[in-house]
Length: 291
Image 1 (tube, rainbow, N blue to C red):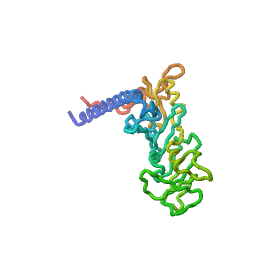
Image 2: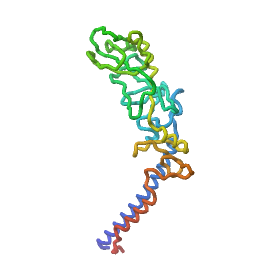
Image 3: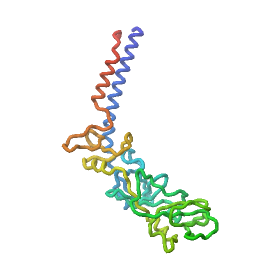
Image 4: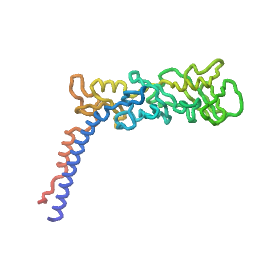
């Protein structure tokens, strides 16, 4: 067999391999999409308060496509506490109302002491969250000089706190002459007569948390579940999508008004694969020297 024949044989072998790989990938892609419906059928539960929670939330061990990447719930199995990270801050989830798309959260670092231990302001990711009820800001001041300014309340942080004097005042303020300031949202009833803050009462009220709502899912997820699909997250479009038990496995909804299936979303059709194979043959003619 001459070198030209060997070259022709190598080309045909490569062509055969490419076609097999394309078809194999198409088959596996369909099977993998079908698997979304089965793997995303779980809900999150932790303790007796947070139970049966679905999209946009998911647990840390659930597949990534089963929930929004910023809605991962973590269960402290020892204490039956649920936590979530928002804008690099750890919160305890006190309740979740999926019907109204609200949840009550509290900074984890105020759950055992009156004063927040992390010197970082409370900040929401406003692209996906917003405050759902009226609340007031309170500023904790750390490392302040020995003074007694008006409207500043000295508080005892308790629980082995050893960071010096801590003052708290209503509103959002900078550190001023102090070393650091931390702004925490709390109830509008947190201030007493003359604008002074009752540190003991405020600490208990901060542990009751504040209400926020989320903007993910909503109508898109409602349409999906109404069509007997499961809501999931599409990392290609960064949007809510719908996982179905039958083809098309990934779509906006699983059925249309007339009962037919909508076009598959974000995947290649078999006609595309066929045209790809035909073009591959047409563009490169076979080597006639192959024996």
